[in-house]
Amino acid sequence: MIVRLMGEGQLDVAADDLSALNTLDAELEKAIEADDETAFRAALHALLGCVRKVGRPLPADSLAPSELILPPADAHIDEVRSMLGDEGLIPD
Image 1 (tube, rainbow, N blue to C red):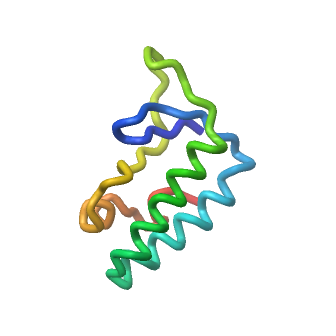
Image 2: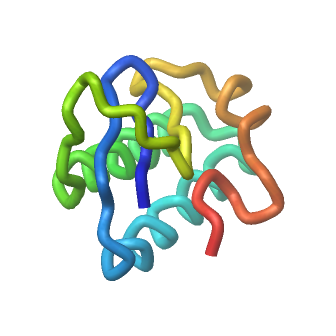
């Protein structure tokens, strides 16, 4: 799955890693629902860090379409709230 980290580029994430990302996504959703800025910030950084860890960076000139777009690490809670779908940022 090709994931775009806004402001950073694209990474290829293996299907086997999606379960861990969905767990972190659920934590992010809970923090947003609770309007807990501290938990939100920690969950967002954990999710992005995991994508960076497990993803393989694509070349900067890659034209592969992104299947997921994740917000930058400094995104505001309201920005991320507006990006959430029925399944969070990362669909099951």
